[in-house]
Amino acid sequence: MASISVEPGDPGAAGRVNMGFIAAIVAVATIGGFMFGYDSGVINGTQKGLEAAFDLGKLGIGVNVGAILIGSSIGAFGAGRLADRIGRRGVMMASAVLFLVSALLAGAAGSSAIFIIARIIGGLGVGAASVISPVYISEVTPAAIRGRLSSVQQVMIISGLTGAFVANFALARYAGGSTADFWMGFTAWRWMFWLQAVPAAIYLIALTVIPESPRYLVARGREADAHQVLTRLFGRAEADRKVVEIRGSLASDQHRPKLSDLKDRTSGKIRPIVWAGIGLAVFQQLVGINVVFYYGATLWEAVGFTEDQALQTNILSGALSIGACLFTIFTVDRIGRKPLLLVGSAGMAVTLATVAWAFSTAVTDAGGAVSLPGNNGIVALVAANLYVIFFNASWGPVMWVMLGEMFPNQIRGSGLAVAGFAQWIANAAISVTFPALAVSPGLAVTYTGYAVFAAISFFFVRKMVHETRGRELEDMQG
Image (cartoon, rainbow, N blue to C red):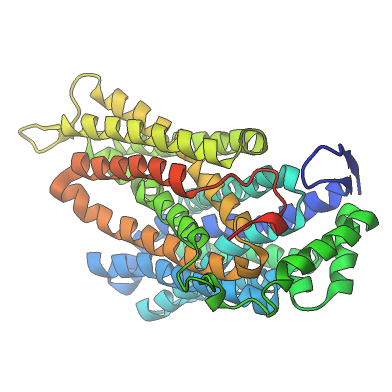
Protein backbone atom coordinates (compact mmCIF):
# COMPACT_ATOMS: atom_id res chain seq x y z
CA MET A 1 0.00 0.00 0.00
CA ALA A 2 1.23 3.46 -0.79
CA SER A 3 1.93 5.93 1.98
CA ILE A 4 2.26 9.68 1.81
CA SER A 5 4.03 12.10 4.04
CA VAL A 6 1.92 14.98 5.29
CA GLU A 7 3.36 18.36 6.09
CA PRO A 8 3.38 19.20 9.79
CA GLY A 9 1.17 22.21 9.16
CA ASP A 10 -1.63 20.13 7.71
CA PRO A 11 -4.34 19.94 10.40
CA GLY A 12 -5.16 16.52 11.68
CA ALA A 13 -2.81 14.62 9.41
CA ALA A 14 0.63 14.50 11.06
CA GLY A 15 2.78 11.50 10.22
CA ARG A 16 2.62 9.03 7.36
CA VAL A 17 -0.82 8.26 5.98
CA ASN A 18 -1.46 4.92 4.29
CA MET A 19 -3.47 6.37 1.41
CA GLY A 20 -3.75 3.08 -0.49
CA PHE A 21 -5.46 1.43 2.48
CA ILE A 22 -7.66 4.46 3.14
CA ALA A 23 -8.71 4.64 -0.51
CA ALA A 24 -9.67 0.95 -0.43
CA ILE A 25 -11.72 1.49 2.73
CA VAL A 26 -13.56 4.48 1.22
CA ALA A 27 -14.21 2.53 -1.99
CA VAL A 28 -15.87 -0.27 -0.04
CA ALA A 29 -17.82 2.00 2.32
CA THR A 30 -19.26 4.07 -0.52
CA ILE A 31 -20.74 0.99 -2.20
CA GLY A 32 -23.41 1.64 0.41
CA GLY A 33 -24.06 4.97 -1.31
CA PHE A 34 -24.32 3.21 -4.67
CA MET A 35 -26.86 0.78 -3.20
CA PHE A 36 -28.73 3.73 -1.67
CA GLY A 37 -29.04 5.29 -5.13
CA TYR A 38 -29.77 2.03 -6.96
CA ASP A 39 -32.51 0.94 -4.56
CA SER A 40 -34.11 4.38 -4.79
CA GLY A 41 -33.94 4.50 -8.60
CA VAL A 42 -34.82 0.93 -9.63
CA ILE A 43 -38.53 1.48 -8.95
CA ASN A 44 -38.81 3.97 -11.83
CA GLY A 45 -38.69 1.31 -14.53
CA THR A 46 -40.93 -1.22 -12.82
CA GLN A 47 -44.20 0.63 -12.27
CA LYS A 48 -45.98 -0.75 -15.35
CA GLY A 49 -44.96 -4.25 -14.33
CA LEU A 50 -46.23 -3.77 -10.78
CA GLU A 51 -49.53 -2.38 -12.03
CA ALA A 52 -50.06 -5.34 -14.37
CA ALA A 53 -48.85 -8.05 -11.96
CA PHE A 54 -50.79 -6.89 -8.90
CA ASP A 55 -53.74 -5.12 -10.60
CA LEU A 56 -52.90 -1.82 -8.92
CA GLY A 57 -54.61 1.53 -9.31
CA LYS A 58 -52.93 4.91 -8.86
CA LEU A 59 -53.20 4.73 -5.07
CA GLY A 60 -51.78 1.22 -5.03
CA ILE A 61 -48.83 2.28 -7.18
CA GLY A 62 -48.17 5.17 -4.81
CA VAL A 63 -48.16 2.86 -1.79
CA ASN A 64 -45.85 0.34 -3.48
CA VAL A 65 -43.45 3.04 -4.68
CA GLY A 66 -43.44 4.92 -1.37
CA ALA A 67 -42.94 1.87 0.84
CA ILE A 68 -39.17 2.28 0.70
CA LEU A 69 -39.41 5.65 2.46
CA ILE A 70 -41.04 4.01 5.49
CA GLY A 71 -38.14 1.63 5.85
CA SER A 72 -35.59 4.35 5.13
CA SER A 73 -36.75 6.62 7.95
CA ILE A 74 -36.76 3.72 10.41
CA GLY A 75 -33.40 2.46 9.16
CA ALA A 76 -31.78 5.87 9.45
CA PHE A 77 -32.98 6.33 13.02
CA GLY A 78 -32.10 2.83 14.15
CA ALA A 79 -28.72 2.70 12.44
CA GLY A 80 -27.18 5.54 14.41
CA ARG A 81 -27.94 3.95 17.74
CA LEU A 82 -27.17 0.42 16.51
CA ALA A 83 -23.77 1.63 15.30
CA ASP A 84 -22.88 2.42 18.92
CA ARG A 85 -23.74 -1.17 19.86
CA ILE A 86 -22.49 -3.42 17.06
CA GLY A 87 -20.14 -1.05 15.28
CA ARG A 88 -20.11 0.98 12.09
CA ARG A 89 -18.98 -1.97 9.97
CA GLY A 90 -21.55 -4.20 11.65
CA VAL A 91 -24.38 -1.89 10.60
CA MET A 92 -23.06 -1.65 7.04
CA MET A 93 -22.94 -5.45 6.84
CA ALA A 94 -26.51 -5.64 8.11
CA SER A 95 -27.59 -3.13 5.46
CA ALA A 96 -25.89 -5.22 2.75
CA VAL A 97 -27.89 -8.25 3.88
CA LEU A 98 -31.08 -6.17 3.80
CA PHE A 99 -30.30 -5.01 0.24
CA LEU A 100 -29.75 -8.63 -0.83
CA VAL A 101 -32.94 -9.93 0.79
CA SER A 102 -34.98 -7.03 -0.59
CA ALA A 103 -33.73 -7.54 -4.15
CA LEU A 104 -34.52 -11.24 -4.18
CA LEU A 105 -37.89 -10.89 -2.44
CA ALA A 106 -39.11 -7.91 -4.50
CA GLY A 107 -38.36 -9.70 -7.75
CA ALA A 108 -40.11 -12.86 -6.59
CA ALA A 109 -43.12 -11.15 -4.95
CA GLY A 110 -46.41 -12.77 -5.83
CA SER A 111 -48.57 -10.08 -4.26
CA SER A 112 -48.54 -6.38 -3.52
CA ALA A 113 -48.28 -7.09 0.21
CA ILE A 114 -45.10 -9.17 -0.23
CA PHE A 115 -43.64 -6.53 -2.53
CA ILE A 116 -44.31 -3.76 0.01
CA ILE A 117 -42.60 -5.83 2.72
CA ALA A 118 -39.62 -6.34 0.41
CA ARG A 119 -39.35 -2.62 -0.29
CA ILE A 120 -39.58 -1.74 3.40
CA ILE A 121 -36.73 -4.18 4.03
CA GLY A 122 -34.73 -2.48 1.30
CA GLY A 123 -35.59 0.88 2.81
CA LEU A 124 -34.11 -0.21 6.13
CA GLY A 125 -30.85 -0.84 4.28
CA VAL A 126 -31.06 2.47 2.41
CA GLY A 127 -31.65 4.43 5.62
CA ALA A 128 -28.83 2.67 7.44
CA ALA A 129 -26.34 3.08 4.59
CA SER A 130 -27.27 6.75 4.12
CA VAL A 131 -26.10 7.72 7.59
CA ILE A 132 -23.44 5.15 8.53
CA SER A 133 -21.24 5.22 5.43
CA PRO A 134 -20.39 8.95 5.85
CA VAL A 135 -19.69 8.65 9.57
CA TYR A 136 -17.50 5.59 9.05
CA ILE A 137 -15.50 7.39 6.35
CA SER A 138 -15.06 10.43 8.60
CA GLU A 139 -13.73 8.22 11.41
CA VAL A 140 -11.00 6.51 9.35
CA THR A 141 -9.70 9.40 7.23
CA PRO A 142 -7.28 12.27 8.00
CA ALA A 143 -8.91 15.60 8.85
CA ALA A 144 -7.05 17.37 6.04
CA ILE A 145 -8.75 15.31 3.31
CA ARG A 146 -11.82 14.07 5.16
CA GLY A 147 -14.21 16.32 3.24
CA ARG A 148 -13.20 15.19 -0.23
CA LEU A 149 -13.28 11.51 0.71
CA SER A 150 -16.68 11.84 2.40
CA SER A 151 -17.99 13.64 -0.69
CA VAL A 152 -17.49 10.46 -2.71
CA GLN A 153 -20.68 9.22 -1.04
CA GLN A 154 -22.84 11.65 -3.05
CA VAL A 155 -21.10 10.68 -6.30
CA MET A 156 -21.89 7.04 -5.57
CA ILE A 157 -25.53 7.81 -4.72
CA ILE A 158 -26.02 9.51 -8.08
CA SER A 159 -24.05 6.75 -9.81
CA GLY A 160 -26.39 4.21 -8.22
CA LEU A 161 -29.44 6.11 -9.46
CA THR A 162 -27.95 6.31 -12.94
CA GLY A 163 -26.97 2.66 -12.83
CA ALA A 164 -30.54 1.66 -12.01
CA PHE A 165 -31.90 3.80 -14.87
CA VAL A 166 -29.44 2.26 -17.34
CA ALA A 167 -30.11 -1.30 -16.13
CA ASN A 168 -33.88 -0.79 -16.35
CA PHE A 169 -33.58 0.66 -19.85
CA ALA A 170 -31.33 -2.17 -21.07
CA LEU A 171 -33.53 -4.94 -19.66
CA ALA A 172 -36.71 -3.39 -21.03
CA ARG A 173 -35.13 -2.79 -24.45
CA TYR A 174 -33.75 -6.34 -24.70
CA ALA A 175 -36.97 -7.99 -23.49
CA GLY A 176 -39.24 -5.74 -25.57
CA GLY A 177 -40.77 -3.95 -22.57
CA SER A 178 -40.73 -4.07 -18.77
CA THR A 179 -43.79 -6.37 -18.74
CA ALA A 180 -42.42 -8.73 -21.42
CA ASP A 181 -40.96 -12.15 -20.60
CA PHE A 182 -37.21 -12.32 -20.21
CA TRP A 183 -34.72 -14.94 -19.06
CA MET A 184 -36.18 -18.20 -17.60
CA GLY A 185 -39.69 -16.99 -18.41
CA PHE A 186 -39.77 -14.24 -15.77
CA THR A 187 -40.83 -10.73 -16.79
CA ALA A 188 -38.19 -8.05 -17.25
CA TRP A 189 -39.35 -5.90 -14.33
CA ARG A 190 -38.59 -8.74 -11.91
CA TRP A 191 -35.04 -8.99 -13.25
CA MET A 192 -34.64 -5.27 -12.63
CA PHE A 193 -34.84 -6.06 -8.91
CA TRP A 194 -32.90 -9.32 -9.05
CA LEU A 195 -30.00 -7.59 -10.81
CA GLN A 196 -29.56 -5.50 -7.66
CA ALA A 197 -28.48 -8.65 -5.81
CA VAL A 198 -25.12 -8.53 -7.63
CA PRO A 199 -23.79 -5.24 -6.16
CA ALA A 200 -25.43 -6.12 -2.82
CA ALA A 201 -23.44 -9.36 -2.64
CA ILE A 202 -20.25 -7.56 -3.66
CA TYR A 203 -20.87 -5.00 -0.91
CA LEU A 204 -21.36 -7.70 1.73
CA ILE A 205 -18.21 -9.61 0.76
CA ALA A 206 -16.07 -6.46 0.50
CA LEU A 207 -17.11 -5.31 3.99
CA THR A 208 -15.49 -8.39 5.52
CA VAL A 209 -12.01 -7.13 4.62
CA ILE A 210 -12.16 -3.57 6.02
CA PRO A 211 -11.56 -2.72 9.69
CA GLU A 212 -13.98 -1.46 12.29
CA SER A 213 -13.93 2.26 13.16
CA PRO A 214 -11.23 3.00 15.75
CA ARG A 215 -13.55 5.52 17.45
CA TYR A 216 -16.11 2.77 18.04
CA LEU A 217 -13.42 0.37 19.26
CA VAL A 218 -12.16 2.83 21.88
CA ALA A 219 -15.74 3.55 23.00
CA ARG A 220 -16.22 -0.19 23.55
CA GLY A 221 -13.00 -0.51 25.55
CA ARG A 222 -11.08 -2.27 22.77
CA GLU A 223 -8.12 0.09 22.72
CA ALA A 224 -5.61 -2.51 21.53
CA ASP A 225 -7.76 -3.23 18.45
CA ALA A 226 -8.20 0.51 17.85
CA HIS A 227 -4.44 1.05 18.10
CA GLN A 228 -3.84 -1.70 15.54
CA VAL A 229 -6.27 -0.10 13.06
CA LEU A 230 -4.86 3.39 13.61
CA THR A 231 -1.30 2.12 13.17
CA ARG A 232 -2.22 0.65 9.81
CA LEU A 233 -3.92 3.90 8.82
CA PHE A 234 -1.51 6.55 10.14
CA GLY A 235 1.57 4.88 11.61
CA ARG A 236 2.48 3.90 15.17
CA ALA A 237 3.33 7.36 16.52
CA GLU A 238 0.10 8.86 15.29
CA ALA A 239 -1.83 5.85 16.59
CA ASP A 240 -0.45 6.40 20.10
CA ARG A 241 -1.61 10.03 20.01
CA LYS A 242 -5.02 9.24 18.50
CA VAL A 243 -5.95 6.62 21.07
CA VAL A 244 -5.26 9.08 23.88
CA GLU A 245 -7.30 11.82 22.17
CA ILE A 246 -10.27 9.56 21.50
CA ARG A 247 -10.21 8.25 25.06
CA GLY A 248 -10.11 11.82 26.36
CA SER A 249 -13.06 12.91 24.22
CA LEU A 250 -15.16 10.10 25.69
CA ALA A 251 -13.90 10.26 29.28
CA SER A 252 -15.76 13.46 30.18
CA ASP A 253 -19.09 11.63 29.93
CA GLN A 254 -17.96 8.56 31.87
CA HIS A 255 -20.42 6.22 30.11
CA ARG A 256 -21.03 4.60 26.79
CA PRO A 257 -22.95 6.68 24.23
CA LYS A 258 -26.73 6.82 24.63
CA LEU A 259 -29.63 8.81 23.17
CA SER A 260 -30.05 11.01 26.25
CA ASP A 261 -26.57 12.44 25.57
CA LEU A 262 -28.24 14.68 22.98
CA LYS A 263 -29.45 16.83 25.88
CA ASP A 264 -27.12 19.30 27.53
CA ARG A 265 -26.53 18.09 31.08
CA THR A 266 -26.51 21.62 32.46
CA SER A 267 -29.58 23.11 30.80
CA GLY A 268 -31.53 19.93 30.10
CA LYS A 269 -32.22 21.19 26.57
CA ILE A 270 -31.34 19.60 23.25
CA ARG A 271 -27.79 20.58 22.30
CA PRO A 272 -27.52 23.29 19.60
CA ILE A 273 -25.33 21.00 17.47
CA VAL A 274 -28.22 18.53 17.26
CA TRP A 275 -30.58 21.22 15.94
CA ALA A 276 -27.90 22.23 13.44
CA GLY A 277 -27.67 18.64 12.22
CA ILE A 278 -31.44 18.28 11.94
CA GLY A 279 -31.66 21.59 10.07
CA LEU A 280 -29.01 20.56 7.56
CA ALA A 281 -30.76 17.24 6.97
CA VAL A 282 -34.21 18.76 6.53
CA PHE A 283 -33.25 21.75 4.37
CA GLN A 284 -31.40 19.42 1.99
CA GLN A 285 -34.81 17.95 1.13
CA LEU A 286 -37.04 21.02 1.45
CA VAL A 287 -35.33 22.65 -1.54
CA GLY A 288 -37.06 19.99 -3.67
CA ILE A 289 -34.13 18.10 -5.18
CA ASN A 290 -35.90 14.74 -5.22
CA VAL A 291 -38.62 16.22 -7.40
CA VAL A 292 -35.95 16.34 -10.12
CA PHE A 293 -34.80 12.76 -9.52
CA TYR A 294 -38.20 11.12 -8.95
CA TYR A 295 -40.45 13.13 -11.25
CA GLY A 296 -38.07 14.70 -13.79
CA ALA A 297 -39.65 13.21 -16.92
CA THR A 298 -43.19 13.86 -15.73
CA LEU A 299 -42.27 17.43 -14.79
CA TRP A 300 -40.88 18.36 -18.19
CA GLU A 301 -43.68 16.63 -20.09
CA ALA A 302 -46.14 18.65 -18.01
CA VAL A 303 -44.82 21.86 -19.56
CA GLY A 304 -44.78 20.69 -23.16
CA PHE A 305 -41.57 18.70 -23.61
CA THR A 306 -41.85 15.44 -25.58
CA GLU A 307 -41.07 12.19 -23.75
CA ASP A 308 -37.78 11.89 -25.62
CA GLN A 309 -36.79 15.46 -24.69
CA ALA A 310 -37.77 14.84 -21.06
CA LEU A 311 -35.63 11.69 -20.85
CA GLN A 312 -32.69 13.50 -22.43
CA THR A 313 -33.10 16.26 -19.85
CA ASN A 314 -32.93 13.67 -17.05
CA ILE A 315 -29.70 12.25 -18.47
CA LEU A 316 -28.25 15.77 -18.71
CA SER A 317 -29.21 16.48 -15.10
CA GLY A 318 -27.54 13.26 -13.97
CA ALA A 319 -24.31 14.07 -15.80
CA LEU A 320 -24.25 17.60 -14.40
CA SER A 321 -24.88 16.22 -10.90
CA ILE A 322 -21.85 13.96 -11.07
CA GLY A 323 -19.69 16.79 -12.47
CA ALA A 324 -20.77 19.13 -9.67
CA CYS A 325 -19.98 16.51 -7.03
CA LEU A 326 -16.52 16.03 -8.50
CA PHE A 327 -15.99 19.80 -8.16
CA THR A 328 -16.88 19.52 -4.47
CA ILE A 329 -14.48 16.63 -3.94
CA PHE A 330 -11.60 18.83 -5.12
CA THR A 331 -12.67 21.99 -3.25
CA VAL A 332 -14.42 21.09 0.01
CA ASP A 333 -11.16 20.78 1.96
CA ARG A 334 -9.81 23.99 0.42
CA ILE A 335 -12.85 26.29 0.47
CA GLY A 336 -14.56 24.78 3.49
CA ARG A 337 -18.04 23.40 4.20
CA LYS A 338 -19.85 26.57 5.25
CA PRO A 339 -18.89 28.73 2.23
CA LEU A 340 -20.05 25.99 -0.14
CA LEU A 341 -23.38 25.72 1.69
CA LEU A 342 -23.92 29.49 1.59
CA VAL A 343 -23.15 29.75 -2.12
CA GLY A 344 -25.36 26.73 -2.78
CA SER A 345 -28.29 28.21 -0.86
CA ALA A 346 -28.06 31.54 -2.68
CA GLY A 347 -27.67 29.88 -6.07
CA MET A 348 -30.59 27.52 -5.51
CA ALA A 349 -32.85 30.34 -4.34
CA VAL A 350 -32.20 32.36 -7.51
CA THR A 351 -32.44 29.44 -9.94
CA LEU A 352 -35.57 27.98 -8.32
CA ALA A 353 -37.23 31.38 -8.44
CA THR A 354 -36.36 31.57 -12.13
CA VAL A 355 -37.87 28.14 -12.77
CA ALA A 356 -41.02 29.22 -10.91
CA TRP A 357 -41.29 32.36 -13.06
CA ALA A 358 -40.88 30.34 -16.26
CA PHE A 359 -43.59 27.89 -15.20
CA SER A 360 -45.91 30.78 -14.33
CA THR A 361 -45.96 31.73 -18.03
CA ALA A 362 -47.21 28.32 -19.20
CA VAL A 363 -50.17 28.42 -21.61
CA THR A 364 -52.69 25.77 -22.63
CA ASP A 365 -53.93 25.50 -26.19
CA ALA A 366 -57.38 24.47 -27.42
CA GLY A 367 -56.35 20.81 -27.41
CA GLY A 368 -55.24 20.95 -23.76
CA ALA A 369 -51.50 20.80 -24.52
CA VAL A 370 -49.30 22.82 -22.18
CA SER A 371 -46.24 24.78 -23.37
CA LEU A 372 -43.95 27.59 -22.33
CA PRO A 373 -44.07 30.56 -24.73
CA GLY A 374 -41.11 32.09 -26.54
CA ASN A 375 -37.76 31.15 -25.04
CA ASN A 376 -39.20 30.44 -21.60
CA GLY A 377 -38.78 26.69 -22.06
CA ILE A 378 -35.05 27.21 -22.57
CA VAL A 379 -34.96 29.56 -19.57
CA ALA A 380 -36.64 26.90 -17.41
CA LEU A 381 -34.30 24.19 -18.68
CA VAL A 382 -31.14 26.23 -18.07
CA ALA A 383 -32.30 27.42 -14.64
CA ALA A 384 -33.30 23.91 -13.56
CA ASN A 385 -29.93 22.48 -14.52
CA LEU A 386 -28.09 25.34 -12.84
CA TYR A 387 -30.14 24.51 -9.74
CA VAL A 388 -28.97 20.88 -9.99
CA ILE A 389 -25.36 22.09 -10.27
CA PHE A 390 -25.65 24.40 -7.24
CA PHE A 391 -27.24 21.60 -5.17
CA ASN A 392 -24.71 18.93 -6.05
CA ALA A 393 -21.77 21.28 -5.60
CA SER A 394 -22.94 22.14 -2.09
CA TRP A 395 -25.87 20.72 -0.14
CA GLY A 396 -25.87 17.35 -1.87
CA PRO A 397 -22.44 16.12 -0.71
CA VAL A 398 -21.64 18.66 2.02
CA MET A 399 -24.66 17.77 4.16
CA TRP A 400 -23.44 14.16 4.34
CA VAL A 401 -19.88 15.31 5.03
CA MET A 402 -20.99 17.47 7.94
CA LEU A 403 -23.34 14.93 9.48
CA GLY A 404 -20.48 12.45 9.49
CA GLU A 405 -18.04 14.76 11.25
CA MET A 406 -19.82 17.59 13.11
CA PHE A 407 -20.97 15.69 16.20
CA PRO A 408 -18.62 14.99 19.15
CA ASN A 409 -17.60 11.33 19.53
CA GLN A 410 -19.97 10.79 22.45
CA ILE A 411 -23.11 11.72 20.50
CA ARG A 412 -22.13 10.91 16.91
CA GLY A 413 -24.29 7.80 16.67
CA SER A 414 -27.28 9.38 18.38
CA GLY A 415 -26.93 12.62 16.44
CA LEU A 416 -26.88 10.70 13.18
CA ALA A 417 -29.97 8.79 14.28
CA VAL A 418 -32.20 11.83 14.73
CA ALA A 419 -30.75 13.80 11.80
CA GLY A 420 -31.06 10.83 9.46
CA PHE A 421 -34.63 10.21 10.56
CA ALA A 422 -35.49 13.87 9.97
CA GLN A 423 -33.88 13.76 6.52
CA TRP A 424 -35.99 10.82 5.38
CA ILE A 425 -39.21 12.26 6.82
CA ALA A 426 -38.56 15.48 4.87
CA ASN A 427 -37.76 13.39 1.78
CA ALA A 428 -41.10 11.61 2.09
CA ALA A 429 -42.99 14.86 2.63
CA ILE A 430 -41.57 16.45 -0.54
CA SER A 431 -41.86 13.30 -2.66
CA VAL A 432 -45.44 12.48 -1.65
CA THR A 433 -46.84 16.01 -1.89
CA PHE A 434 -45.33 17.04 -5.23
CA PRO A 435 -47.80 15.28 -7.58
CA ALA A 436 -50.76 16.95 -5.87
CA LEU A 437 -49.05 20.34 -5.56
CA ALA A 438 -48.10 20.26 -9.24
CA VAL A 439 -51.83 20.19 -10.07
CA SER A 440 -52.96 22.64 -7.41
CA PRO A 441 -51.71 25.27 -6.69
CA GLY A 442 -49.46 24.46 -9.68
CA LEU A 443 -45.79 24.21 -10.61
CA ALA A 444 -45.08 27.94 -10.31
CA VAL A 445 -46.26 28.18 -6.72
CA THR A 446 -44.66 24.86 -5.77
CA TYR A 447 -41.24 25.91 -7.06
CA THR A 448 -41.63 29.28 -5.39
CA GLY A 449 -42.01 27.38 -2.13
CA TYR A 450 -38.80 25.46 -2.76
CA ALA A 451 -37.05 28.76 -3.57
CA VAL A 452 -38.22 30.21 -0.25
CA PHE A 453 -36.82 27.23 1.63
CA ALA A 454 -33.50 27.67 -0.20
CA ALA A 455 -33.40 31.33 0.86
CA ILE A 456 -34.18 30.43 4.49
CA SER A 457 -31.42 27.79 4.42
CA PHE A 458 -28.88 30.57 3.67
CA PHE A 459 -29.68 32.35 6.94
CA PHE A 460 -29.85 29.05 8.82
CA VAL A 461 -26.30 28.20 7.74
CA ARG A 462 -25.01 31.67 8.67
CA LYS A 463 -26.40 31.42 12.20
CA MET A 464 -26.30 27.72 13.13
CA VAL A 465 -23.52 26.01 11.17
CA HIS A 466 -19.87 26.20 12.23
CA GLU A 467 -16.95 25.36 9.94
CA THR A 468 -15.40 21.92 10.48
CA ARG A 469 -12.71 21.95 7.78
CA GLY A 470 -9.40 20.54 9.02
CA ARG A 471 -10.62 19.91 12.57
CA GLU A 472 -10.03 16.60 14.28
CA LEU A 473 -13.16 14.68 15.25
CA GLU A 474 -11.99 14.76 18.89
CA ASP A 475 -12.10 18.60 18.75
CA MET A 476 -15.76 18.82 17.71
CA GLN A 477 -17.86 20.68 20.27
CA GLY A 478 -21.50 20.00 21.04
